[in-house]
Image (tube, rainbow, N blue to C red):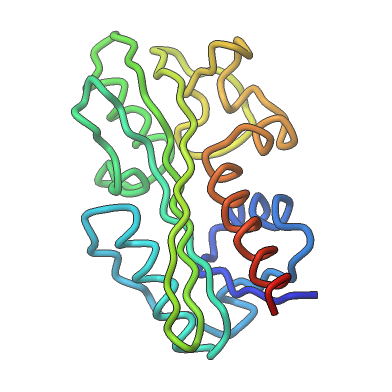
Length: 194
């Protein structure tokens, strides 16, 4: 089975990626013994994903993948964007959601989740894959599944928030599913060519 090192210790993200890339052996940072903090100082999702993947590929001498993802809200001029996980001072899901709802002040807004997956190989190949999922931010929290902003991210065609979807439902339409599908297609092409 092909091995990929995922530059993450986020349990939710690791589980989601393992489900979507079931044909690959996905190793976490803990699995490879990497415990240092990675400073994500890029201004785009692509830059941050590449920063993480480069460091881990260099550390492990293996193919590394990294996800940088976040929520882009139209009425907040694209906030929280690359700062989605650390939008509030406390950097918790609860406080991040509260800050969004406070700034929107009762308004709903079109929004989309972005996921960029970076792949970096030990020989220096670098490529990114971007996926998006469009919906809107609603003013009340609904559902108990998922993480992050899922309770306020509403998908009209399903009449549910991300937090009201099962993992299987979410993984079939999510931004991360879209970016990982692009990655998986690229990996299949590479395997067929070699």
